[in-house]
Amino acid sequence: MKRRTFILTAAAVATIVAIPVVKYGCRHTMTHDPLVRPDVLARFCDEETIREIGMRYRSQVPGENKKERLVELLLTDDTGKKISPSSDSVVSDWIEQKIQQEFKTEKMVTVAGWILSQTEARQCALLSFSEN
Image 1 (tube, rainbow, N blue to C red):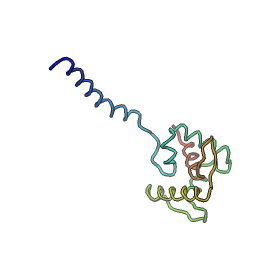
Image 2: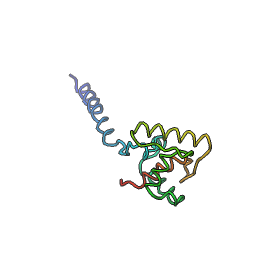
Image 3: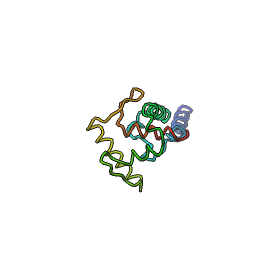
Image 4: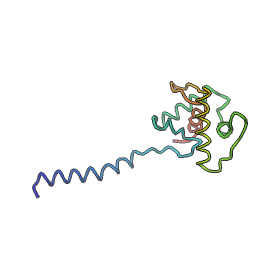
């Protein structure tokens, strides 16, 4: 084997091995709890930014500055219908429906320059209570 071929082959193998290692080390550590994770926003922002949005929302809306209150609001719709957080998929579907409905009815808030549904802002606020 020629030296050039060996070096190129070794470099290719090193790259193939390094990519999964780097991805593993840089993966997001944000929770998968649908009450706490604003899915769409998490595609654009890191966890620190989402926490900052949540803290600002809590300061803008002092009546929602408690975990229990935020959970209650997230699990209740506008008509007072409440769901039990029986499974992540049920809660995830519920949250997604609430967000879609809020955008349709223009029930949005602006926090730190972001235009969010009220539910997304509440999810950020709930995340801001958890430790890094």
